[in-house]
Length: 604
Image (cartoon, rainbow, N blue to C red; front, side, top):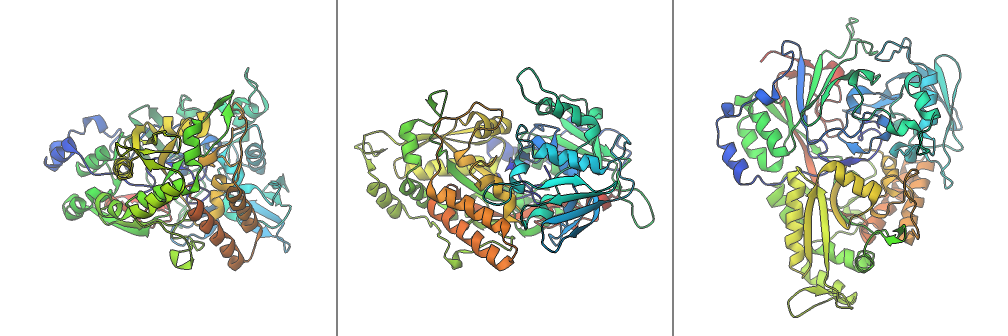
């Protein structure tokens, strides 16, 4: 899907420089390595191919999961480089701007929007990009047999109706809505996909009865078969090592003198496995940019001049970080997804509130984040105009073990002779907590939460997992108990509709089965959960910004009262970028590379 800051919220393994969650304190060997001189790390394994052409080298923690934009569920992904939608977002102002569409016209009743495509658009294989591709994209996105996060962002009204998308003529496409829908323009950043390549895969089914589209453009697809419309196309993918993007010669942008953009010929994604490795590579000159982890900030700040880079501070990040329990009370094939004893704990609001009071967030800020952040109190991004601060009555949870113990006592929990917390039936309170491995901040948060909860007698078995394994647990098998994760967020709260709608693709704390998954038995939603979903629907229907704010304020009140997510820390958006990358206009909204088409690489 489109970059999460533009379209919606997605699972993030790293986020932008402090989007979701950060890394933890470096350990033993890492700190020993930091004492080596800058040139002490061999970069042969990260050698840049064709080093005589302009190239931007950055990193990612893990391999891409898919090359199909409509099937993507994680961030970062390749699609901000390779695909565009009808609209985009200005990384400085957050305003909706034209992309593949040069303009749009909205009817007075707000129920019809006509987009006009730019002239001469082409795919990376040279084929024309037409309104047929736009209609095909939205037909596929709205196809109930295609599991995709993006569909939730277009559901309109209590019945979840979808727009009708039709061709008007060779360059114009019309969206017909059942009622006015405030988020539509921002949501049309959804990536347009090529009908001439992918239509047969939607219309044909495999032996399992599912559209072939679901297995098309996996990461085993040769890069030259991935047809794109963005500034770059895939050149090479070596699993576990790197992804190389090359400039799309058919991209539509030109500068004022008619020169084709982007100017940077290649982008190299080094797959590094951990933020510690990324940090070491950056210090050694192997990367052009790195997200600044709190534990690395002081050292990097001292090296700005010598390393020829600048640490950019975009202020509060769009992302959120949180701890959450699996509240799903359903079964699959007769087996409960969550052990019934643990499920009773997790679904007790007093238990969740007690856990929240037991987490020492200020210590998280000071020790793990080195003071480079603040306590998160809302599911809505701090830079969003719809963010409601605690001063507006949003409940917060300061570190208070006495309140935690009182809540647990009221819910029937007690300490046994060994100081272990047990429920009223004598069951010891113990559960498994997962997060994505390689994310040192999340690993450090998990270690602290484990320690914090030991103080009230709870045993936490902390288990970091590979990011793709983690996503499969949360969205497919649904076999998990507690998790630390983050969402990339955005300016428009409706981008998170897929988190809050009851059947949303990222309704992670109480996920329903997807279209191609084994169905669940006995799934149920709480009253507060239904109310939040209804409020998201109403807020999308409301065109008055003041009224929309009040609706979203109530969602924030409910989320903080009932705690489907226990929010942790809001990071500062920090990134170090080499001064050889010219034209960077860094913001929390767009990061360092939102204007990649006009960036240039200077000589060292």
